[in-house]
Length: 75
Image (cartoon, rainbow, N blue to C red; front, side, top):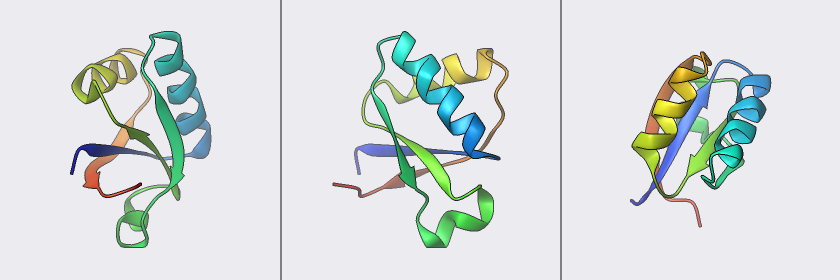
């Protein structure tokens, strides 16, 4: 599983994180959180295909709280 999911408390945090990553040339996309992980997040997450650790670092430095991470099989 090469794709990685970052889960947040709110869809606002998802959107802000996506924009921050985009400004740092890291591609991510907003996806629905898989049902078995949904109780840990708001229902939307960010899917980051490359530079996952760097993406987490950038989000952490921006002050946006991350509630979880998971490896997933999205196409």
